[in-house]
Length: 371
Image 1 (spheres, rainbow, N blue to C red):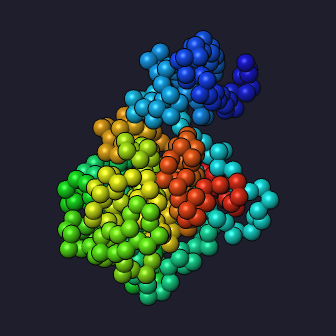
Image 2 (image 1 turned 180 degrees about the horizontal axis):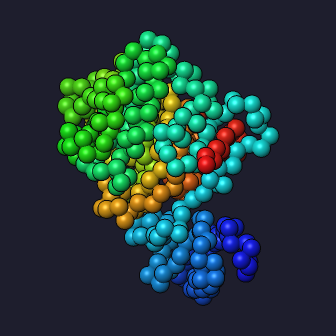
């Protein structure tokens, strides 16, 4: 094991569970026990280490299928503790031959201050003026679905939203509106999330989404399962659409990220749950893709999503992802969470439909680590 002179290094331990490992009929319980003992030994000798893409195995989860293990394990708190992280910045590997000239497909920022992280990231993409022109109307769609304080990570970071509103006005926007079709009572969600206060301070408008009268019927001609829906008028009438989800666990969709966040711009989202949820999520994106996607992965709810139970469900990953490609943004966020894009059906479906690219190795990615 490394001596004292190496204590600042981060040791990476990763075991990828195979179908053979997880199949009780093949009798490979001993393999799993050996992997668990190795993790115990290494973590004891290097208590400061972080585990990337590592699964600690307990006897009750030995015999689950791999996919069930990943998602049920997350929900049950298999990944827990301040020394354990779900993913890693190092997993966001783009195309090494892409020109590093600032013409990036995606920017990932790691830091300690979400507003400053956004400023750094958007500047590397050419600034907010690349996306918002003078005189344009802007709609921002965060996740504000739950009556929960920011520390619970059920909603998007309020300070991040305030900074985005401010930068839109600096780019010349004539109006900036913020809304969500909330799950809990909308006034409580807007207030207790902290988003209403930050938007108001920045000069933006908070708009409700709690009445069907705010929504208009639209056709989704490229949809396979979702062929029509009702969309909030702000999405239909605004010049610029900025999508700002929070990365978190979700009981139905596995993860809620940028595409899943768009369920908050429609009225009849319950229908989606009853008619192939993952296909509907991809289908809607063919109708109106956001002009910019900003994924808040600073505080991340690792289990009990989408509402969460307490701050014990939350870890800090200190990350932010920005991209105009909604599929690429979701793929990058999935990797930060510790999963693969193909583990999330709606991402794989959207990639197959040509909505965007989940192949990060083909993209020009700027990874920024702030001090």
